[in-house]
Image (cartoon, rainbow over all chains, first blue to last red; front, side):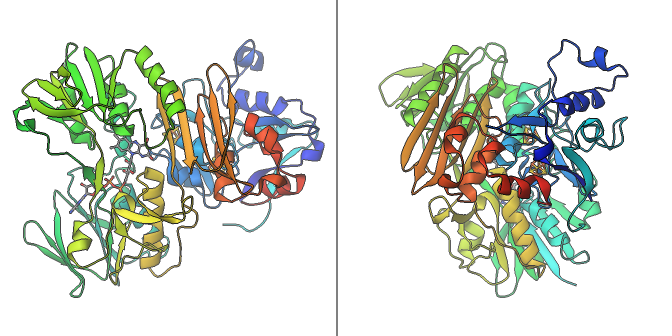
Amino acid sequence: MKRVYVNEEWCLGCHLCEYNCAFANSGMKDMAFALKDKKIFPRIHVEDGDKITFAVSCRHCTDPNCVKSCIAGAISKQDGVVKIDRSKCVGCLTCVLVCPYGALAPGENGTMQKCELCLENSCGEPACVTGCPNKAIVYEERGAAE
Amino acid sequence: MKKYLIIGNGAAAVGCIEGIRSVDKAGEITVISEEKRHVYSRPLISYYLEGKTDAERMKYRSDSFYDDNGCRVIYGAKAVSVDSSAKRVKLEDGTELSYDELCVAAGSRPFVPPFAGLDTVEKKFSFMTLDDALALEAAITKESRVLIVGAGLIGLKCAEGIYGRVGSITVCDLADRVLSSILDADCAAVVQKRLEEAGISFMLGDTAERFDGDTAYMKSGKSVEFDVLVLAVGVRANTELVKNAGGEVNRGIVVNEKMETSLPHITAAGDCAEGFDASIGANRVLAILPNAYMQGHVAGVNIAGGSADLGSAIPMNSIGFFGYHIMTAGAYEGEMLEERSDETVKRFFVKDGLLRGYILLGETERAGIYTALIREKTPLDTIDFELTKKVASNAIFSREIRRKKFGGVV
Ligand SMILES: Cc1cc2nc3c(=O)[nH]c(=O)nc-3n(C[C@H](O)[C@H](O)[C@H](O)COP(=O)(O)OP(=O)(O)OC[C@H]3O[C@@H](n4cnc5c(N)ncnc54)[C@H](O)[C@@H]3O)c2cc1C
Ligand code: SF4
Ligand code: SF4
């Protein structure tokens, strides 16, 4: 299965992926209108280390802790993609407690959001990757298929 | 074709069904469910009262779950005995069911101490099932004075659930602090203050000794008048089926890493079972939903002929009140290291160069990174622990480790 992978050497720390993610999931047509002067809730986060920056999003784990732990049964794996039904989420943060990568965070209404690879929004493939100016994140097949 | 029988219909049962089906698509699965409901998320009953979910969205799995997995569910039936040599289970109505493999996923029940005069209380409730929540909902009014006995997770979640829908809430507990099973005294005081600011009253180090109608007489000599009583003192694992069949039980049904009990062809999972807790190196009941699901899954895989073991289970909790989040994990032993601000507290417990446990109040972002440090026993001298204490970040790892985490299939 194709996933998003990180080439941290190439990351500029520009945070463009966060904006592209928030826009792709906003359902709006105009980026400025969708994001200007608003707090954004992207599903990918650029982490700043000492001398290093890199973008973190869901790994779509082979054996996902979040799916097994969600107290509402809101997270499921479908064809390898780990998805969340936000209407069932009650915001208890148990998924945050168990995700080893820090890949989930609450959205604007307090229910959880995570990367679902843009397969169902208008983008159709990860908008973060498409917009990355330096190929610091890529969307490709690596390792064994499931 | 194997015949699987599952007693109980909660998260552990669902884990067991999904575990069986990951190995055996054909075997016959029968589920005995005392509750007459499609499987729902038990922890959501307080969110239901708060209006954050409803009976439809509380379903832990879709309506077609049992059909999709080829399961027969017998609703409203209670298993009363197990004959492990004949491999048969008897139901309350006398029906007998045979099995090749049995999984006991019977959960727990509320523990109600023998309070004098409890039978004189008209409106009294436990807080374990959706039916309990619905009955409580029907009994409360905007004027109700509610007394909750028990300041643990269940009692306080109940308080949050009915908050705003009743006149007043008083919570008493024999322990001297709230959430005594997961918080130390300092952290409990921080949480208690927040709850008090919201208007909830506490009587700690004190509990009801005797009831007379709408009055509770406390150990301290005080008395409390109430309209509605909620008993949330604690829970007891449902161990009797296995115990009476001659299996080893302690506080929970004793199981090994594969969730096998001491009886052949009988596994147990979830709140009724006492599995290995890696944080203390001993068996203990870990009564949390993630653990119930995972234990059920391990049991299911094994009875279907696959091979799975539980690996590193530790106690952990994520609970919030009025938007203030609390997370805890592991054991609170060793040196305590603290990061504190006006609104937040983070306590880390370090022993032998390993993170053994933590308590986080108010700041819980990416806390799973901490949980993984405990579970994976990551030596702290291989990461940037100073940074770790301030924020949970993947920047604490070496480039090599990060390459594995974010450049490979995990
Ligand atoms: C109010 C509340 C809040 C909670 N909040 C959280 C939380 O935030 N996070 C968390 O991780 N955990 C929470 N928990 C704990 C969590 O709900 C349990 O750990 C989990 O539900 C255990 O699942 P289980 O399948 O082992 O048992 P259960 O969900 O208890 O299911 C057992 C089932 O077996 C049935 N049964 C029992 N005996 C028999 C019999 N003899 N015959 C037939 N059927 C039988 C019962 O009717 C029941 O349906 C909470 C619990 C409560 C009550
Ligand atoms: S949210 Fe975390 S645990 Fe769940 S699949 Fe993604 S990376 Fe894995
Ligand atoms: S916060 Fe939502 S998605 Fe995460 S475990 Fe709780 S209910 Fe499930």
